[in-house]
Image (cartoon, rainbow, N blue to C red; front, side, top):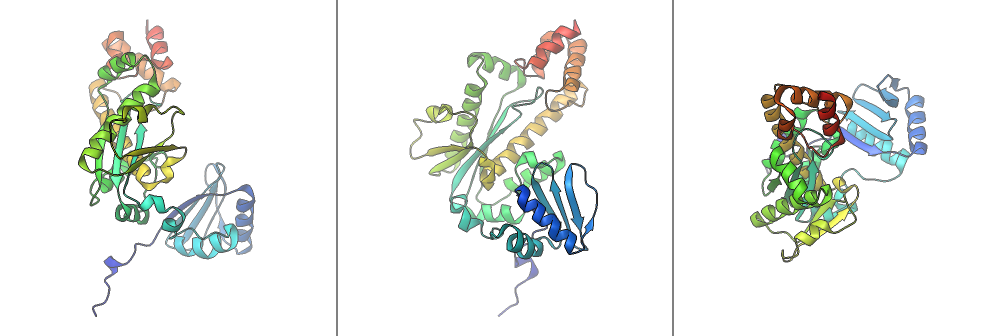
Length: 314
């Protein structure tokens, strides 16, 4: 029998994240200190330790991040065996069997940003794709700080065998018109974008159900999909824990990033994300450069930041 090639072996994890309770964090810090791990400083971290192969950082937010060649060994023999008492790494299919069913994941990007579109993405995948993404360390887009990392992940998702993807968004001028058309109700407009993406994805591959991160208690998206047969759309908070929803969040963010790059070229500015005071200053620059009537080409006009920028630019 031929020997198994290294490329056929499961890829070793070099990154692992988990939320810890304060009690678990204290227990872990005590373990690291007693076992003479080297402490070091990390911004926004309660503690950070390292050895030759592994870095362990616990942030003030309660998130634990483990990185390095020794990640799997540390998680299995220290974190799970001595701190949490729960074996999770490699047991995703046991703890979350629904993740491995063929289904759709839906998420959006750009909702909280003054500049750039509101993007909905629907990703359809099955167990093989999900296992591959878990092995590759796929993360929900909000946990990825680098645009280039988001784009690289999105490329990997799109190249995964058996995966279908659909996105829905509009140009900024069209977005602002649609916002008025939907009664100036952002949730109704977002629901329409979600429903459009879901329909497009299901036309490529029908699956029995989908998961959407809950943004409203009302069945706004479901109401727009009443004519779609044999499809059940579920909603829950923290839906991005589902790898297929996480994949959708990455695809949506990548689409948003590409759209922002085009707006950067059109505006001559490196437009910022969010809706902070510095973003307002950029909106004022656009008004001064192109006129107040042209802000709709770049920004969501229903944001308070937009009206403030127009008023201050006069």
